[in-house]
Length: 104
Image 1 (cartoon, rainbow, N blue to C red):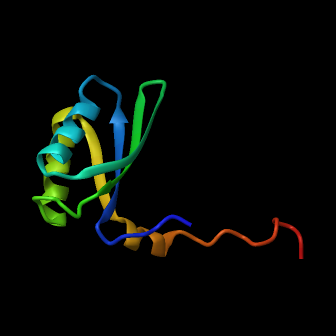
Image 2 (cartoon, rainbow, N blue to C red):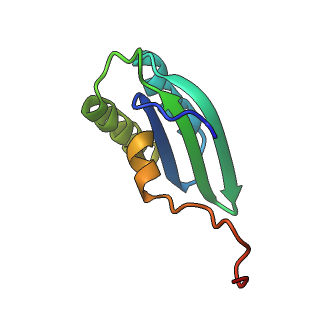
C-alpha cells in the first residue's frame, strides 16, 4: 500500500479543453514549490480532466493560499480546480471488498 502523508494533496481539474490548462496549474505549483508526484489527464471529446498527486511539504503557501491560487488559475483557464488533502480523502474511500461481489 502507498504511503499516505499529511503533506500530500490531490488536485482535480475539470472543464472544457483549451490550450494552457496544464501550464496554468503547474505554474502555480512550481511558484509555490509544490512537488508533483503523479499526474494523469484525459480529454473526452472537448471535456478536459486531470488528477494530480502533489507534495506540499516544501510549499511556500499554506493549504488555503494554495487552494485560492489554484482556483484563480482555473478561472483564468475556464476550468474548475479543486484540492483535497490526501489523508482526508482516504477517509472517504471505501475499502476494497475482500471477496468478489455476489459470493457469500
